[in-house]
Amino acid sequence: MIFNAFGLVYTAESNLMLRELTNSRSIAAVPYGGRYRCIDFVLSSLVNSGISNVGLIMQKNYHSIMDHLGSGKEWDLNRKRDGLFILPPFVTKENTGIYKGTVDALHSVMGYVRRSSQKYCILTGSHTIYNTTFNDMLKQHIKSGADITIMYSEEKSFNPDDQFDDLRLTMDASGRVVELEIDPYRPKTNYQSCDVFILEKSLLEYLVEDAYAKSCYDFTRDVLIKKVGTLKIHGYRYDGFVARLNSVGMYFSKSMELLKKEVRDELFNQEHPIYTKVKDEVPAFYGRDAKIVNSFVADGCVINGRVENSILFRGVHIGKDVTLRNCIVMQACEIQDGSELDYVIMDKGVLVKRGRRLSGHNSFPVVLRKGMTV
Image (tube, rainbow, N blue to C red; front, side, top):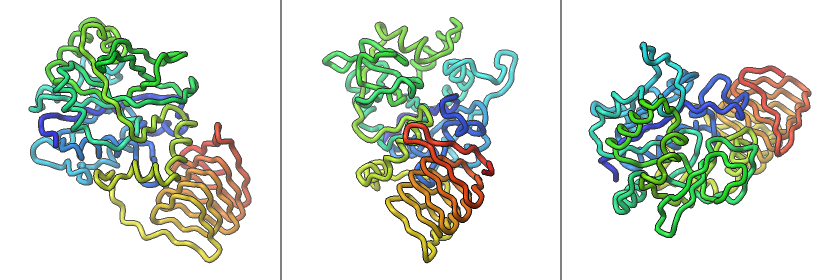
């Protein structure tokens, strides 16, 4: 268990390729997997590693995530010492409240960083989903004598349309990073960052203050890439399931992978569980004519139609003679009698009226924005 590190999660990523899914929420608050939010996987990985001091850097549209996290009770982070710290932007003469980049955001929370008593910092983003612990990564970081260690996975498939903060690592035989590329048109390597970095707190302070003084605002481009020759940067390989929510297409495909048993068993590993906000819902109700095939169904659902290869979040109502295939239906949606949907992503609170027909494609699903009526 890690007792000498704190977590710092940057939730201010702004990805326009997620379209309607991030109109009213940050990427960290995007629902995933039937009852979870993206932030749950990062927070759970930190907590399962023994980390009890976690700071969340906010930017905009953070009401949803604050409502979800509350005091941090579900993650055992409601503590007298350390615990969960929400770090929203604030306006001063130097800070307008709108961050110019990750360095700017880190500079604005340096007070929290300096107050943290732990020696090491685990710096992460919030749009990458995985389930791991960082104990072995920290051990490797200390043993190798690295300045910075980056967690990466090997991704053999590549689609330039899905690129968002796509950091690629080129390493020598010892595991030291010799070159970094971000959003390359033709990647030289399959080693893709999982957006997790370990470094000493003192080094983080120096790198941020030095970059900020030179009007450099992006941690990846202005710090890591420029200093790859002077800093000792190592990679740590992670071979588990990784979902990078870079686009609507990627969100859809990585959600559909949860219908595979081997993926579910790996992501929802009982040895280090994923925690989320607890809601007291009744069990799902299946009507006499309901038929469910290879689907995720959360509690509180009422189903009277056919659901196939789909993911239903809490409190979804499916009417009679409804056919639902290859769909993601978020919390409190209602699909009325006789409707037929295929390859559709429905955000929270969507109403589909009687007899509607909606069909997308595996590579381009239809997205219905939050609260929409069709």
